[in-house]
Length: 309
Image 1: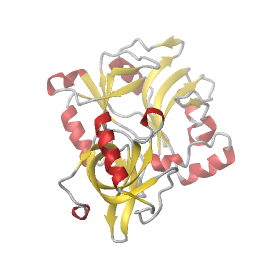
Image 2: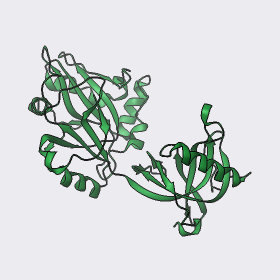
Image 3: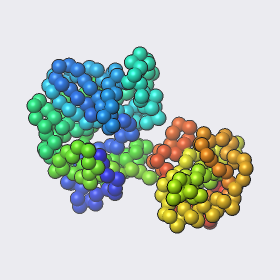
Image 4: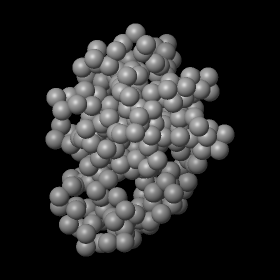
């Protein structure tokens, strides 16, 4: 079951929702046959058990057949989920020895937030609040796994707290909702903190098909002491009209050399004079300073590149 992006429910309705911290990791379904073994599958259905040897002991932590839903994360030094750290652990199912070594360097943690099967019973039709109570009753707290608290009501305060803590946001779950496998449901709402930033356009990548000759993505940067530092690729957020306007500006500003201090590893990039300023929204940054989940907001003709610091 997947969450739908959306706004925080209004205060008058928040008592009908449970609020959980939105984690930034790898979604997984956890199959516990009850014989002490455990199988982890990704959203695609791939078996990823061997990539995370630290979860092996979870199979004997319950001793009952169960299917759980959760998120695999790697924490940073402040205890926040860090997808960039987790990436070093992903894709190692075919290399158990390397997975074991990486488990020592970058420990993974399994956050269990739902249960869909227990003993011999499918419980997807049970209300969300009752499923969470069943899950909490299993007492699944260990070095490498935990069951997060679900705060009922108080969504506004919870969202403010996650922002102050530098977390990605919240997931609001309607307490009466059933579990809908394979569905992106409006009963689960993911609310991300959107940060905004003024950036300088230094290049672009042409679109394909009907977008030929138009920007499929913009390559943007920020000034630092060495020049224009590449900050990432933005490929969403504009209307067809805005895309055409951007194309005209980009073609007029074309140059032959890369304006960034380091050439971005982007195939098919075209370069422009770094004079267009735009505003983008984003969720977080990588350790290298790249924007994660960036989205174009608007051109800023009121700003010159030298105004961006």
